Length: 259
Image 1 (cartoon, rainbow, N blue to C red):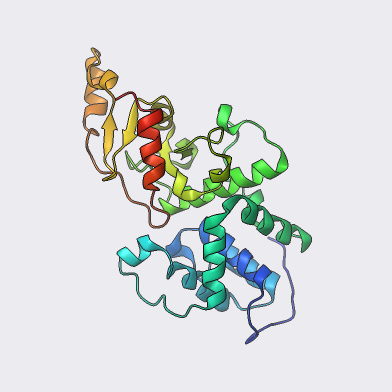
Image 2 (cartoon, one colour):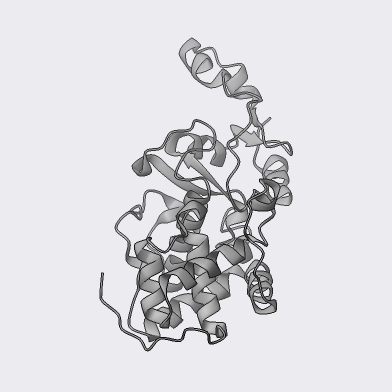
């Protein structure tokens, strides 16, 4: 990790560019790891000339606006500003452009940050084939935001093997480009369940429970039935942030699910 040196800006208001970088990082790492000891928090602190503790507090501020964290009664998330809210709302209204804005700000300052993390999966299928630079930035952000929100566990099986996990789009890229980078349009699934979901063999209810298609329920293969039936109507593991959007899962049930 490069050692960045910037003049300290302690006590000075956060700029718009700094807030964009902070919110981008907030989305990429698990909320419980938004601490001053986190290497990525320390790297961002060096980049913007602030202390790691200051950056960690700013990441915590963004959590005050997250409905899922509010539902879990996470405390201490109250010291927010009008600018914090504006960045939160702006990202949620246009994930694609602001994700790319953060990417350009980082690279203008000479660092790639999390785009170059080694834990990013290699392309494995049609939806993850090599993409032009801007689309790859969106895919990188989407994967990290979704998987970190589920704390790197499949939301159906609980499997916690990063090499087997996929950030699955609920509404595919090809159907809604505006939601390519939107983490509320994502689920963390193991590779097998990602394929089942994309094929419409499983879906998610409004109550966030698993729905098996008629095809799977009527499977004549006893081993398949035994493996999958235990998940029918079972609740998925809720993410710590970015709960799946109801309109997205309803779209999947109406347009993809074979139930």
